[in-house]
Amino acid sequence: MLVTKKILADKLLTYINREIDLQNLIHWAEEMIRESDFEEKDFEFIRKILARIGLADVREFGLTWDDCYNYLHELGYDVKVELSEVS
Image (cartoon, rainbow, N blue to C red; front, side, top):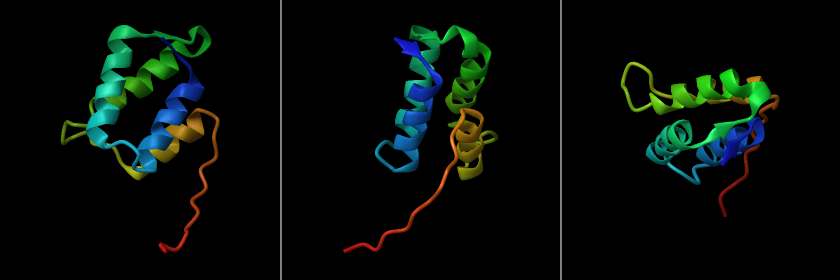
C-alpha cells in the first residue's frame, strides 16, 4: 500500500469521527510504518506523523484533539466542526 497525505488525513478523520478507536488508529499507523511505502515527495512528513500516532498509547505522548487538528492542517486541510442535534 502507498500511504499518501490524503490516506493519512482520511484515517485521522475516521478517528475524530469515532468510526475507529485510538487503539485501532495506533495499530494502523504501526502497520503502515512496517508494511507500506510512502508517497515519495512527502516521505519524511508522512513518516513523522505516523510515528507520532504510533506512540499515542504511551502516556507521555498521547494524542490530543490539537494534535489531530495540527496534523490535518499540516496535511493541507482546514478543520471545521459542525454540531448536529441528536434525534
